[in-house]
Image 1 (cartoon, rainbow, N blue to C red):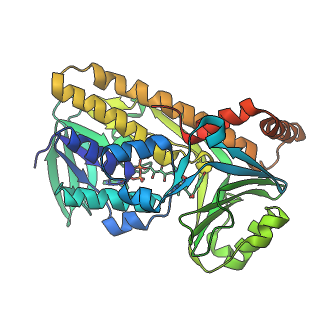
Image 2: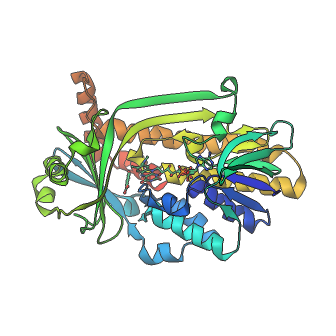
Image 3: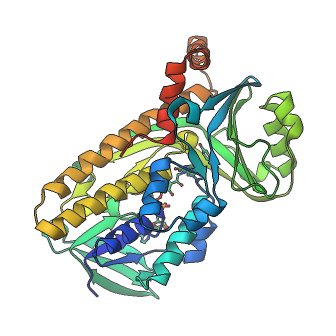
Length: 389
Ligand code: RFL
Ligand code: PHB
């Protein structure tokens, strides 16, 4: 088999890149390790930046998003039960859209199928070679047999645990990493959200987040210890703990119900540079991870592939390497902006075990400044809705 661009991974990065390339007349094949149903079963992101929505508009895959997605003008930050609203629209004239990653992935998969574009599921890429010599070959296993896909370029969109980044010798990657001393325990339930907007809560008992997928489906998170086991958390225990981290008025309005899903995710920041290795390009979670506090992971996957598609398009037009060379730097500039913001949100809103009292007083002073200063609120708003591409 042969194609122009082999895309490893059918998450948001891979699917979005496939569409962008197709619109530029560039043939591509997606290879995905799991079944489409498995990919759609993962409960992940929920917040889309305005820039992400604009990219989806451009490729014509946003009809359902505009029908069903919830446009939010701001978020609330609750500190010890006291709520403060950050009004994006009045501060900077922008908004965010709440639309689940699952739904977005489904829209992208359906649109790809409708266009008849190839995606091979249950195809696990086991190696990428030849990207340094200019003749890349992607080897994958399907039905117990090994197959080869020859291509001009490989896009490694295979997430943090994928094979693409591991293909690159360690000496050629510079890795920056920070592990946070806690995780998030998340619960999804078919109950109406407690408020119209997201509530990020800093409380003595730890962080909590009230989010949603629709007007009838809620997503809640609470900060937990890294060694916490999800089996130790009955639904009742989760709801009790969540209520204790919110102010009385919000806690009193929470509608509880049986969980559809419950899981624990550790929090970390991770960047592996550069994003170009000959004819192999890394994009999305394959190259970087941010803690979910800033709601940035999916949005960075979108901006990476936006830049990558532009660079590949320029190469097919001119055969000049300059845009391909620029991809890593352009994408990483935006990535580091989001790494900083996600780290900042995480640092302001969580309880850090064994933290010296000085650090917690600085955290309080930082939040106090945020609620008093329009400039500080504008800075938060600008980053939360997404820095420009
Ligand atoms: P994905 O989604 O992990 O997709 C990678 C795909 O590659 C496949 N794969 C392979 N395929 C073939 N061969 C191999 N050898 C392969 N190895 C792996 C995998 O099966 C998979 O299908 O990466 P991508 O596309 O880069 O997308 C990144 C986003 O999924 C991620 O950043 C976000 O979910 C992060 N995130 C959030 N991002 C936001 O922008 N806003 C949010 O509100 C938000 N909330 C979250 C989040 C992530 C969370 N978790 C679970 C880590 C909330 C949580 C709890
Ligand atoms: C979510 O709805 O899953 C969500 C929302 C905001 C975040 C992280 C996750 O910051």
